[in-house]
Image (cartoon, rainbow, N blue to C red; front, side, top):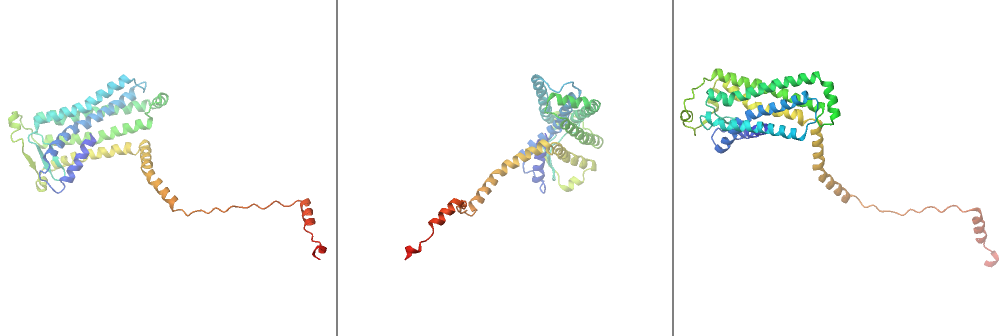
Length: 318
């Protein structure tokens, strides 16, 4: 859900950095729906993480059966995808018009602020994050109370989960909740105070002029209330902050660094081989000169024989 949120937001910022015209209507229809679902999806993902950490900290054993693992994965998948998709579908009920276009922010979803929008859009993330915060606190309490037993249990089970990895998961979950819950509460409370609730009269009344696209210029944006502008900025930067936290906890771990080194060696190996071949071709030819070993010294008998044969008879010369 961070990927679904951050990538479209980055593209929106590039497209609408100096342009507030409605230049990509289909793109805006898709990304605004994804943003509505991602707000709930991030909260559900945080709850799934804390529930899993709580089950590990509270259990007497780390290893689970394959059936239990499949049941857990199905439950988390249905929750992590089902609730956001349901929210995207129900958003049509409180969607007054197609979308708004803001400077830099780009396409933003619209909500007809009413009691129905509180139940469909605003309250679910607050409730999910509050429950997640409760389970995160219980998990930390259980780990502190049973940390020695927990470490021995992980060592004896030979599980891939280690104590440092568990602590990184707990730290990530706690920091995510520490950022998401206050920001979500701030947006919810300030919107509740500054924006009056409209009566939900009928479907036709809410969706009158549904195809309207509201384009907001910079001057019009600065004419909004300060709390409204601040809420827009919080909604813009919250996913980016969560993505940075996620990378800091898992993108800089020992396992991730080992993967980076592996791929760096794998990518650079063809260039190293090519460089080695080039050095071999450019190397000067080596001329080998045979070495001759000195003859062993003559023995005394050989020297005497050699001297006798080498004497010259003067009579022969005459």
